[in-house]
Length: 353
Image (cartoon, rainbow, N blue to C red; front, side):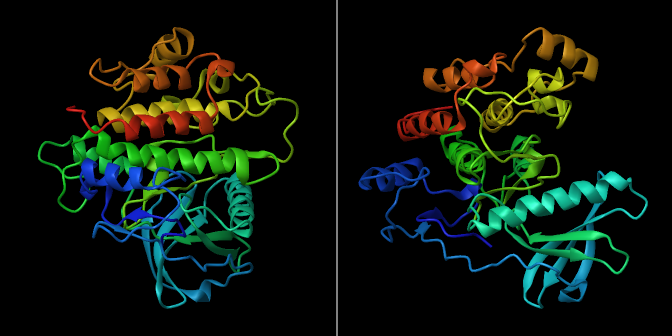
């Protein structure tokens, strides 16, 4: 289920229209929202309008509303299952493992609270929609989310880096300029969390390709708020930092200040965004082969960052360097990063990478 958004590409990222078609539509529009403008267009068969989502978060949901429950994954402390919601909608059920730690239920309850608040504010087209939540007969919380038929960004990248592989449905995800809309939609989601979701902000804190989904139309859907933190009120200026738990997230994408247990703010998500953007650009795993000790010594302490391709536009290289800067005050806000990335995308039709 894709939520309301002015203009979209119908096909998965691997099958996006040609850059020429994309640029033609973008430049015909007088103002830009996200990366694709404010006015809808039916001039090209590859472009269509999102249908409005009328999904409403259901409190006190009963497991009786779910059928066809089949396990999908049992990583971490939760079990994830595919299911059918209300007899018609394909969905995903997330529930703590029976023998998991007590913290698993508490973490899921915190995640449910975040999804509920996002839903109450109308949701966002690039954040997975929560359909509802409830408790089992044994008092265990559970969460029901929309099913992301396009799989994860990690899966799309893996298929693309395999010789002869396809990102989705038979199209090779080979052109860098064709992959940048994915990063733009990811930036849109983070901008919403950091700026618009609350008077304060929401930190995702575990941004990585396995926590970024793709709906059937190929649009980004950020999910898994199990490690997220809500700051109800922003204090001081945008560089104000807050004392929060350290070592939250995946080390490959974790900022130095989180890894070192220092106070931090939403710039930790900007750092993670840069590492994900690099992986989108290269279709390679960042810091591949590094042990935890090597990563701490070389990346967190030594300042090593993934290598930049000299063929990339200078603006893209500078954006990555700014977003993963070791000093969070030197990193741009995600809104500024998104604006720069959009301009790179609009100017990128002549790339041969």
